Image 1 (cartoon, rainbow, N blue to C red):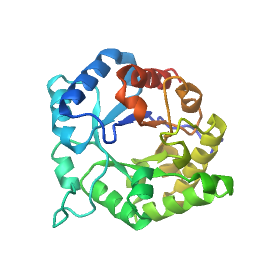
Image 2: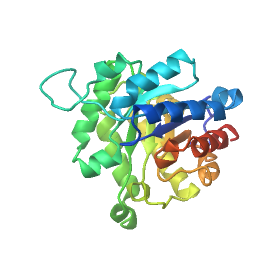
Image 3: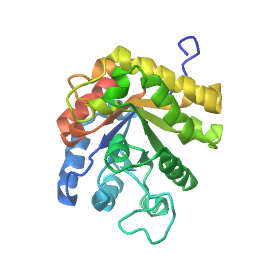
Length: 264
């Protein structure tokens, strides 16, 4: 992939708040973040915020009323459009709130809630059906990394998720590489390790959907990304942004990550 011309992929920095912040706290975080981001940074970098479901409407209202240069994102959705699924939220519900991005197959849902590759594929299809962009998460456990099967695991997750997805849809998607062993642990993949997997993801997309889709798909890195360690990760040629967890709750730290990406 290094020999291919680099298409104009606009980086995406996404803040995944997970199960944190009520709607009142969400207002403060979004407003503080907007003060810390320069127009030059938001011109160069797309920024999405992924609050809990209970804060989606609040954040949508802030973004719209203040005309903030932020995209609204969700953390998950169900694969069915409606039905007897207590506690679930559907893709059309999210689309009505002007949600632009939906995280699909996050490692915590795979590991803690038993989400399978088949469920991830169905959710990805639901997001696409309702004209939103999925952020597809793939990644390996520590045991898989130690066993040397990282690339095999990521390739398998990618093949399953992209099965039956059109090249045009894949081209517009985002794939996030999340080494599970680095999520919330303070550990991090080295820039070289992250680049190796990102390049493998791009190659896997090429096999599934063609070279053009591979050239244009955006690949994020996720795994304890902070303002202090973001720059060398984001400078890698196949990494087009970051899926940020804990640091996205701190407007100063999150803004530093956006600034690091803008400087690349």
